[in-house]
Length: 154
Image (cartoon, rainbow, N blue to C red):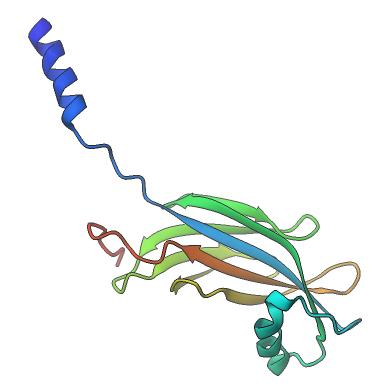
């Protein structure tokens, strides 16, 4: 009995801890408007890109920023504006080491995409606030590199 207990104790003590895979996801709720031309300085480049397709939107402001650690396969909801949410699930890495996200946003169908580091993916939704402002959601993932022992999900 004592030998078994000692063996279990030694085995547990010498086994390396399991690496918990997680990435940090950032979700930014941006409101675009036709009512003014103020642009949050952090959105200058994004506003220029969006105005190419939607020149009527002249003002851009950050309404809410959120971040959370996501474990593989676990969906997390992020508050956006009003009672709307974004649901994001991290599905690991693809063969090139990009992170794979499954995303559900207000007024849009669920979609899955692979992304690289440091870049935000802006998504224009069809949701409008009661003040007529259009919701744009920007998504970003960190860290950028898959661990060496991580196999692609393909």
